[in-house]
Length: 317
Image (cartoon, rainbow, N blue to C red):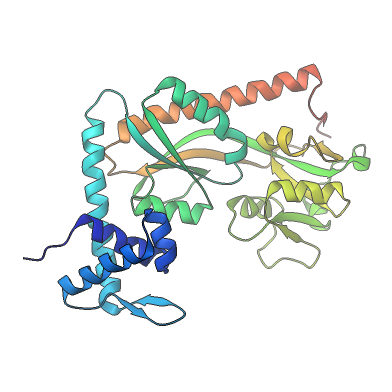
């Protein structure tokens, strides 16, 4: 009978995921020599090599690729045993791993964290901000408990819970504040600044403009909403941002905000988790805390608008 340990399997999975012993060691919070020794002992126990090693890179052997899939199933099952024990309690305690897309995280996370810790002080929140495809991958592999993303994701193995919808607004240079709001047809002819490939918000904006991913020369990419807004303030073009980002991103840029005619472009934000998760009931409760957080943020933004402390918005034309 083979004497494999969970520690060895976790170290192996980290190396397979990062493709690098040093980065895997950092992720596992151990020294690289200690991790390498554990991997070597694992290979000895298995009687075959898991990685092809050379001076520049490592890669999985054919057996290593097959082994990776089985190991991830095992580790996910072990994690779910712990989740099953936590799910038996009336309130969630311990670690909660939440993934969030970048066009939501900076604006909503502070309120979510505050409300979650007030609702349940026993939660130990671990956050992961990255793009939707990576969140889906990590959720599938059991490295996240839940994720806040734009819906739908259309993954049969996930539960999707819609939380709220929000409009997109047009950001343009401050001197354009009194110009007519462009139609989506006119917008296609302007220098449109969008997030780089991989962001779901980019795809949603392109869909509103009825544009394809094979972008025209005048359409420029940015790495964040903050970068896009600052570029607009410098007179480089125009952009779209979600409504929740307006107070944060426009406060230090000489830009104006305009709303499109109805139907306005918008998105639905929701939470997703694995249908097999033992924490499903607790995650449903948490989704309601997230929903209330979003409603609270929206109410605060509305109050700032009424009091005149926020960037004035143009009425629909």
